[in-house]
Image (cartoon, rainbow, N blue to C red):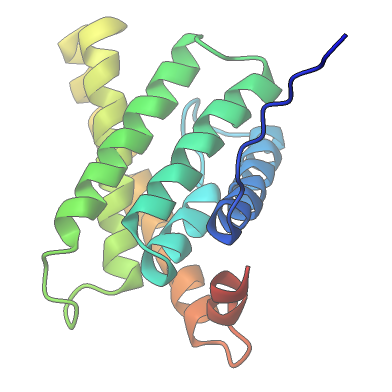
Length: 180
């Protein structure tokens, strides 16, 4: 009997994206274990990896890392196709769209912190838009908006500071991202 083998060529870029996605997935799993005083409010630790990838490798790689993180995170957490998965996917897609548009902003005024805050607002905006369309009445969304906007501002700024410090570190993740 003859066995056929299907082989897919794997490039160095594929391996780098897989390693970075694994890091983002690990942060997603760790974050899921953290207690949250407000349901749905999380620090978005995996977004640190996505933003680093965006700034060091490019938008396409960041989109892959983000998409793989959402999909694999949902599978590992047992929430694939549950409402939380769709909310996460909507937030990730909206955040990536905001970052795609932000590439056209003047870089001297929009660094890691402001990009992180923009991405956080995009993320929560996508989630609230889907929740308002699908799960909650519009009035409930309006009531949640200040809490989620404050969380996006705080966590977006904190994550942006982490990214800025990682980029500025003498043995920064820059070299690791480029070599991976």
